[in-house]
Image (cartoon, rainbow, N blue to C red):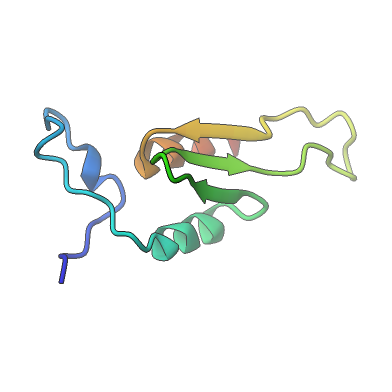
Length: 88
């Protein structure tokens, strides 16, 4: 059984590619964390190891709303930071 990792633990500063632990095959817990923290965004982990967050581009209450509708990242931690910035 793999030890539980905290979000961002796979991107420790100074870690080289051989010392970074792999993500578990089941990322449903990470995706659930994203959904709770960033409602309205859908999070996708591709078979190539890329992370994406998407959301509808039209805000029915404010049609001039022009925030990012798709974000991509190499790690869940990087995506989390991008989502925080887009949510401001």
